[in-house]
Amino acid sequence: MTKASNGVLANTEAGKVAPASREPAAAPAPSKFVLTGVVEYRSGGRTIPDAGARILAFPTMQKPLKKLTSAGLKPGDEKGIDQLGMEGLTKLGGAATTADDKGHYSLPLPKEGAYWILVLSKNVTRPGPLALQLEEQKLHNYFADVPTLLGEKEFTLVIRRAMIGDDGVPASLTLTSMFTPAKP
Image (cartoon, rainbow, N blue to C red; front, top):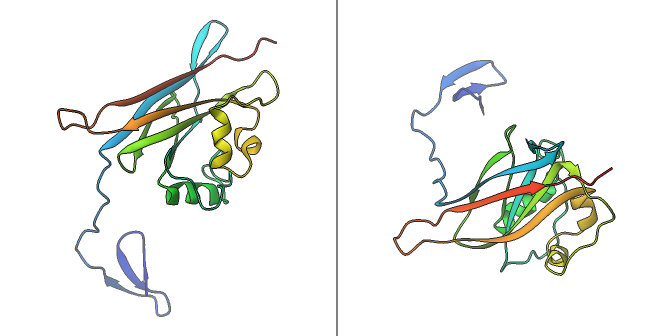
């Protein structure tokens, strides 16, 4: 028997159909901590949404046992066949999302704590070769091939802390990234 997408159990050998249990599946609890923001870039004096930009979050205090591959993490890779990097990021306690057509995103974070937030532009390339700053060198602690992950795209790397405020409510987490293409 196999479960069809409509919630009906189907006997694939005999073509018989039997009703599935009517009990709803337990949905995962929504995260208390959600990073929201916008990714944009400047072009011709205008601000344009960076649709398809990737936003990755990974805990600052936890390093992977085996460095993560970039598969499934780069802009445009989110629907690819190879999702090893995404699976590793999730196991590490991280998360990823893609900016929508207006450049907006909402990224639920698994738990309270400090996260590295890496924003990878979909539409803006760096003006020159990859030269990582001191903080950005920390990407090598997490990813097996940092140049492949970053590609030629512009990126932002910052820390945001998911926490409960003094009022007992999760603190607001936002990050707006603005990329400026290199002059031709």
